[in-house]
Every structure is written in structure tokens, then in C-alpha cells.
Length: 79
Image 1 (cartoon, rainbow, N blue to C red):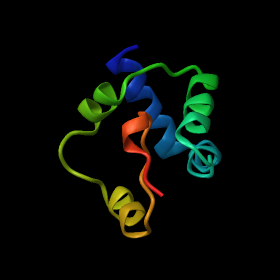
Image 2: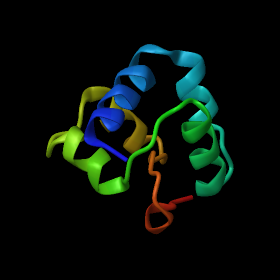
Image 3: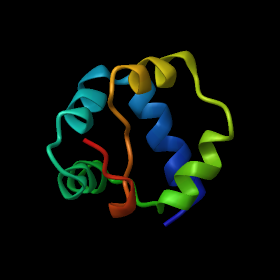
């Protein structure tokens, strides 16, 4: 697990619409983890949070306003 993997994941998530869609359409946290691990990324929720920083991008704000939230750890599941 690494911060570098989390950074690479975020870059792919932002740049690859199909990849982001596969994560957003996953029905559970476990399914999201499988997609992420299957793509070769390995990081903790804390490492992901560290890469995100404290501010949300416009895209993240739109996602929150739309009722979705991307999270990897079991404690973050929101429906």
C-alpha cells in the first residue's frame, strides 16, 4: 500500500471516464475494492485522503451534490 498508488489512482480516476464509471457503478464497497485492486492499485483510505488534501475539486463537489461519494474503506459506504 502506498501514497504513490493512491496518487496514480486519482489521476486515472480523473482522466479515464470508463474507469471512473466502473467504480461509481459498483454496488458495494467490496465491489469498488475489487475494481481498484484489479486495476493494480493498492492503498488505504488514509493514503487516499492524504492525496486528496482538504479541498474538494469542482467535480468532487458535483458528485457530493449528486448524492454519491467515492470511498474505499468499509467505514465510508454511503448510499
